[in-house]
Length: 134
Image (cartoon, rainbow, N blue to C red):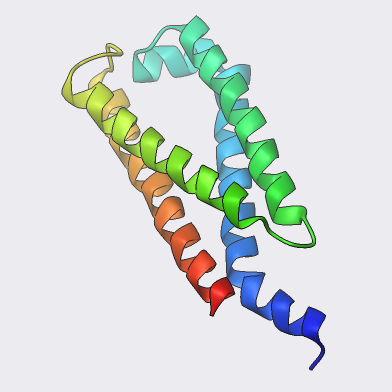
């Protein structure tokens, strides 16, 4: 097995997880951008905030996708996304607990569920880094 193949095998899991993060995050952002009025009625936060979050999520998804597409996945870049995913998870749960974004009941449930998904991406990315380093 060549060195390139061995490295690719070690980073495959991480690459898949980063790619899934990019697709899910970018897709969520597009929904917030395209359907902000409908999403606002369902979840609670106003359309302007949802559009701002949508822009952020689309750009974030593109950045994670770019990292996943690199020949060599940057450890530092991955750690940055792990930290950002962790912060998003904590921030989302805090927003629900402290009533910061006027969530509807469905919105509060959605925020906690998406926080769990983002937290899972962070945990899986940590696992991917460990596999890549082994």
